[in-house]
Image (cartoon, rainbow, N blue to C red; front, side, top):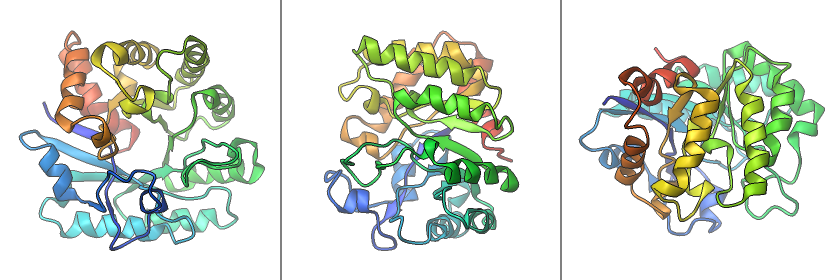
Length: 292
């Protein structure tokens, strides 16, 4: 079946700086992961990709990453398989409107992912030491997404979902895609109760979508049996027409293979109708990310 992999990271440390990888957070990952690598993973399938920002050094201009992906899309022989790019922006900055406008000059741009999970002290470069939801500048900057018709990819802890739903209630026109199942914690009943409350609060809003991805973040030793209940719960909450599938490659290479991830999806969703499978594999992504 034709599909859109809605969560793929590409990077090239010879072109840009990536503290998350270069500081040793994931030493097993390669220094480069390019479109050719992703195409090789998906060999034999009709797979297009939505590329998600890869935590380029926040001290640098984030539009450089967008421009690099735009050049790849324009110049690579298979560049049209990149159907969209979700860029980085710090929405709390005073010049965020101008920054989003610069991102939007690139046709590949579809939205922003600014990871909002936080912990003090931070254990790694992509985890903040500030609760951005409590920052009025960030809340104000979030509204600027509507000015450039951009979506927001939500990457946060499961404990932040309900608070984000309360915030998003005030912004019903900005599409929000919840990454990685909303970061549940497998085999922890208390954490799963908090997670499910947040999932249901977000699903009650009309402008939210669920991305089934990042399986190893829910359970580093995941199997079909361990991940199925979590997938079933988000599918029940959002429905196939608001769910999409992503690989989270190459991060998932640490625990699995590309083929195993998609074989898992195939088995879990084997009883769905053709229309429901089409929603999961590409139609929801086209709606959420406004793809042509």
